[in-house]
Every structure is written in structure tokens, then in C-alpha cells.
Image 1: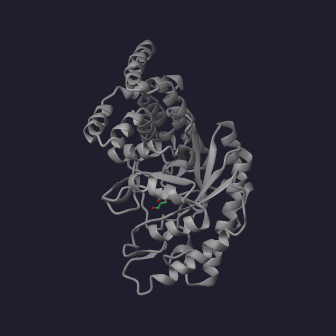
Image 2 (image 1 turned 120 degrees about the vertical axis):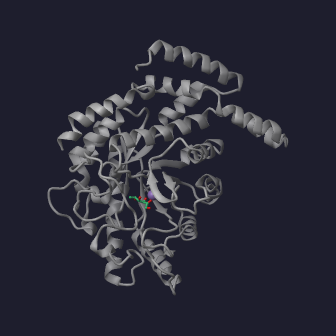
Image 3 (image 1 turned 120 degrees about the horizontal axis):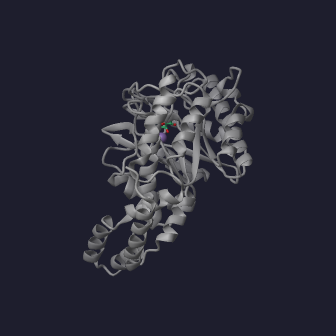
Length: 421
Ligand SMILES: C[C@H](O)[C@H](O)[C@@H](O)C(=O)CO
Ligand SMILES: [Mn+2]
């Protein structure tokens, strides 16, 4: 059912007054929301296969499960699918690419990738007003089959991956230069062991040395920002992960680079929302992989759940938006992949909007005067303030469907495009 425009506007006006009574400026919140990009990961569209060798099984201890029809099989299909999703997602967007998503007519070894292999992505990003982010791909490759990459004991294999990261930084720098917005380049490696290692230290020393070598070249942060992503465990690396949280927190802080916090990469009761403020003291730029772990690092589609809301509140309450790259990281092959992007991104944006509409000043006043009764009462009250009327208005202003209207577009695209693949 289509929601009438006039009703959306009238509901917005009423909601605006309610928020004003709490000292919250809805226009300012909407402006911030519209200007805050979400970095949407390309790999939801094809189950992390990429175009280097899509027939190769996904490795690195991550898994996309499900066999919903219609996955993108070419760069053009993936771009078309993302464009469709973008018509249903309001506000500014970035696209997060992995190295295996190169768009090249010839075979290119991972350590030999160059900006020219991503030219078509850049042309597309320019045409669609998108920023691009990047990731070297240190998985799904014979040189990663032993479970080690940058920390591999073999010098040649380690060098191969160091060279891949170096080459990736040039691609990332190229994105930043071409698009006028820095590309966050996140390094995640799957290195680890299934069973208890005897030597936990040597691989970590090798990883630090490899990263130091890979990141030697100074690149202007106007164009490119290096980030590192920690992890607790992966499938087949249950007992030990070389790039653990402590390793990368120390590495990022000591080298002055960005840290990527993935919501699925910690113990089940450990939340990244509680880590953001602590990390912000030692780390200038931060990247988030907003995702939804169910029992393990399952990378379910982002939901409008407590943790997603808590993450966004932490960013807003601590005024960290300008130092934060909000990215998504999920890959669900069991439902329509374009709907997955739309659901996950809209949920992240809704959570951000709700955080922007929180009466933060009043809450801080209550806390500073030890009035914890008022603090709790107001936090609870703010959950039921009419933020959804502001969201609907935001969708209307940005020419994207209001409410559930977007689902009919998904069904049409599924019938007309995905079903023909
Ligand atoms: C494909 C991604 O880079 C990957 O999901 C990584 O970010 C991760 O979270 C691995 O668990
Ligand atoms: Mn991640």
C-alpha cells in the first residue's frame, strides 16, 4: 500500500514538534543522516565469489550459505544489482570493493593488480556519485590454502601477499584521487590454526613485519586510509587467530593507522559498541563492519537490533561521526541479495537516525548530576518517540520508497532480471 505524500509530511510536522519539546532539532538530524555515507559491500551480491576465479570455493574460514537464485555473475550484473538497491536506499552511499572484484578482460595475478583493472568501477562510481573503499583479498587463493598469508613461515608466500597489499594500496589511492574522497582500505587476513598452537608468537611477529613492509610507502590520507581488522576465530581457525584484537589494536595505535571493528569478530557477549569510545582515544580513524552474528561470525543481514542501535548511539553521543567509516559486512545467499542490501543498509541508517534524534544533552545533564532515575526514564522514553515519522520523511525527501513500498520493486526486478540469469 502506497503511503500518501501529504500524510508523511503531516506526520513529520507533528513528530518534529515532539522532538523539539525534548530539545532535538530534526532538521539537523536529517541533514547529518543524508550526508553520512554507508559503505555498502559489493560481496553480498555474489556470495563473495568475485570475478578473478568465481569457480574457486570461498576460503578463509568464512561462509555464504544458501542458494537463492539470481546471484550476479559478471561485474555488469553486480553493478546493475547495486544500482537497483541504491534506488531503494536513501542518502549518500559508498561501495566497498574487494580485490577479487577486478573488472579486467585478462587474467591478473593477485600481486599484479593495478588501477587499470578497476577503471570501470571508477567510471561507474563517478556516474552514480559514489565513493569507493577497497580491500586486498587474502583468501580464496592457492597461496592461502595452508591457513597463513602475511604470517606464513615461507618467505615467498609471505612476499606474494605483501606485494598484493602494496598493489592494493595503489588501487585504493587511485580511487581516492579519482573520486575526491579517501578510500578506506581494510586488511583482513584469515591466518590462524584449527588446534592449539605451540608457538603463538612467531606468526604474530611475522605479521607485524609483513604489514610494516607492505605499508612502507607513504600515501596521502586525502586519498587512502589503511585499516586493519581483527578477528577472534574462523572456521578451521578455531583455536588461534594471528590477527587478534590485541594484536591489531596495538598495531594500529603504534603505526597511526585505522582500526576496523567487525561486530561479529568477538566473543558472543562482547560488543563493539563498548569498544568504540576506548579505541577512539588511541586511534584517529575507525572503520566499522556492521553485521549480525548469530552464535558465531555468521554475517547475517544487519537488523534493527539492540547492538546496531548501540553502535550508532556511541558514534553520535561521542561526536565521532567525522572519524568513522560506517561499512557493512554480511553475505546471506538464502534470500534475494538485493533485498539483503536494502534491509541491512536501511536498518543501519534507521539506527543512525534514531541515535541522531536522541536527547543527548538532557541525558548527559542527568548523568553528570548523578540523576540516574531521569537518565533511565528518558532513555526508555526516547525509544518510543516518533522517529519513524522522521525516517519516512527522509525517504520521501530522497526519492526512495516510504515504508514497505520498496518490496514491490524487488519483486519486479527479481521477475524481470534475476530470473533470466
Ligand atoms: C569479505 C570480508 O572482507 C570479510 O568478511 C572480512 O571483513 C571478515 O569480516 C572476515 O570474517
Ligand atoms: Mn568484516
